[in-house]
Image 1 (tube, rainbow, N blue to C red):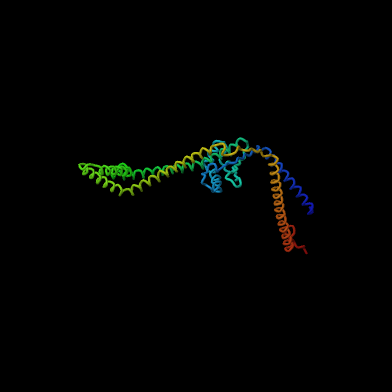
Image 2: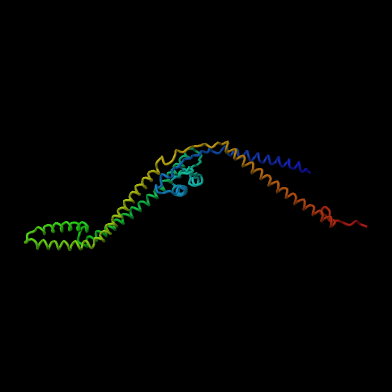
Length: 324
């Protein structure tokens, strides 16, 4: 029967053999794996954001969300040849402190794929953000144009209702005409006074009518001016948004990817440490199970022997009384 120290020496040897075999297998697999290249680029997210946006944290979060959108992943996968699931799980982000810049990283079996993945994904995400702004600006321009048309139609209908092309222009023209008629009336011979006086009276009445509707005309004109100002602002916003769409595709919106080749020695060292720990824990667990099974078996044997002694049975066979 093995003594306890000898049992542990045997177990230690078995554990060492198990660990060595696992390490050899893991080492062989690790060394056969293709080299890994890591590409990293710094993306200047602020380049596609309106100057009025000051919530940098939200902007960075938006970028990280948009870069994982299905449409962005689909275009990136198509242009780089990297499967969408690999892109989804492989792209990593780290914000540059106190800025709106984000470092985007990706690992691949080739430097070209790693570099293409971070470059294409970043540009696509920036284009998506900028295009959303451009779409919003287009909607703003369309709404402003509709408001201008509505205000212009209201003013045109008002002028037409009063039989003039423009109430203000007609009012000013009649004022000048009235002033001229009053001068003529003051210097006219007696034969022309009745005619001139009649004209002065007519112009005065016309001025009274136009003057009475002038406040409403002013209001309609103000509405049109405000609508035009809004349209002008919307058109400026659209121009700026279109500029940001162009900036999203510019090479200067991100840095040239930095390529780092991951050392196989480093990968092997990590794999060895992880495998050794797993093998040791697995071996200890198996030994614990074996001990428990052995203890349970011994308990059962002792119980059986005790029961046989009480009934006079040995070896499991019947006991016969000696003959007289």
